[in-house]
Each structure stands twice: as C-alpha cells, then as structure tokens.
Image 1 (cartoon, rainbow, N blue to C red):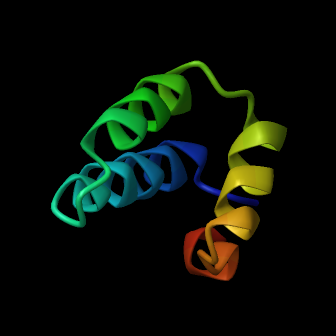
Image 2: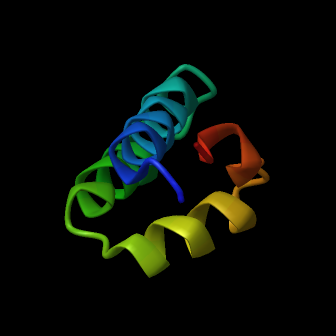
Length: 58
C-alpha cells in the first residue's frame, strides 16, 4: 500500500526545489497540478521524475 499523501508531498517538494534550478514557472505549475492528481497520476509522475515509489510503501 502506498502512502499517497506522503508521495504527493514529496512530488510537491521536488517541484518547489526545481524553482531554485531556474525553472520557476514550470515548477510552480507542476506543484499546483500535483494537488489535483489521482493516485495513479501521482505514481506516474513519481516514476517520470525519477522518484522511487518504494519509499512510500507501508
């Protein structure tokens, strides 16, 4: 079972961290879209962004 709240928070943190890498506009848009993602979309985004979802399994 995946802790989707923790995964959502990690994805949001990744987006805001990207702000410091120079991509503030897209990063903020990604952070906002993370809030509306379904559990399946969260997993897909995590895989796309290179986040190991096993960290969020309980």
